[in-house]
Image 1 (tube, rainbow, N blue to C red):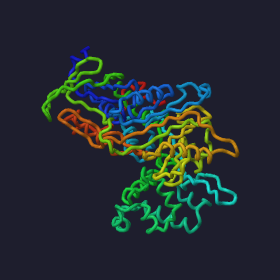
Image 2 (cartoon, rainbow, N blue to C red):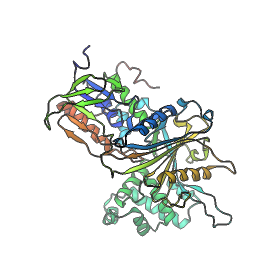
Image 3 (cartoon, rainbow, N blue to C red):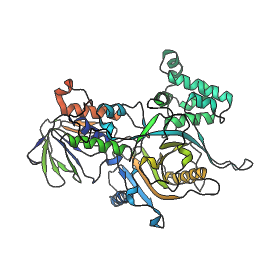
Length: 504
């Protein structure tokens, strides 16, 4: 067998984030010579999922990085219980760094099905969306903070008692409009206001009050809450048309055992089965200088001292590019309660959901010193069905745009959500917290001859299908002229079926 140095690789892929891993999956039946490396000791890169011990090692790595570090992650902090015995063993957890829900109409789902990779992934239903309503001390008696479930179907809108009859008619009129928003008569209504805030369009065009606007805007999962009419209609249309695709009562799914990280690992397994060589804990030390745009072989020195040559080098955009890049704050909280009320089946025949979404509108959360939230705060609640925590516990992933007060606001949001979810005088305990910030990084694909830099991971809370096109373009560069005769990400079952392809 040729050594790493003696082999001329068709492609060296650096990093095992989702994009690089999907590229490995796309090439897994190509017969190409693929070397897939990652400087980290774990799969998933910025999409990884960690045990508690791994999370602490990751946090320590972020803390010891120099101030000039170019990592897209920063300000990582962990809060542990005073009694370590209060937590089960570290491996009982699989905490996702970048949790995203995936709409059932996403092209990612189609590619996982056509490539047969779906057989190794268990998808779980994302159930109800809720809007947080803060306490009202002026009411008699004083109203506690609460969660209001957003109706998910037409029947749900009609049956709910939380929305007045006249408001129901306005909401139904809007939902009917969105389902056909691209038709000629409807597009003439919204296109003149395409760049204006969706909230203004809802108020002026459909007479939706502030509460119903909050319901609609929650479905967009917009980080700044100021999504335009054009983008907002597209997102809500995707949500509504995704409802019922794989069964009643849900529009999105979440992969068990760590979300996007699980997809990345399954894709890498396919690459390994197809003959790819994998090396964790090995990155790139140097890349030999070449004339700009050169088609010469790329000469690489690995961090273990091994020199390799490749026709194409593909790297992930996992470094901070500019100081003013969009940044979000995240808080991962392990909660000592199953939070069962969030995961109820509300549509007959629907599966038990494993994920619920809570939106805290701007201004609905305040810090101890009275600072109000400028942007929405979103919380993804994951039950133990996700495999991310033990039975009897749950995980809350809170996200908001980064500000000077964002860490305190996320902590306040966690406290008021736990208060809203507590029963009677019983307080739900938070067992573990991981806080960090994540930068957007570059959103462009950069190509210099035979070196390709993929975009940084999206900060979106829903999977962004646009990243799939960058993977496809990289696949075309590796395959070359043969790409014209091949279907992308369409594989037949292996014969004879092996352990990777067998149904569970």
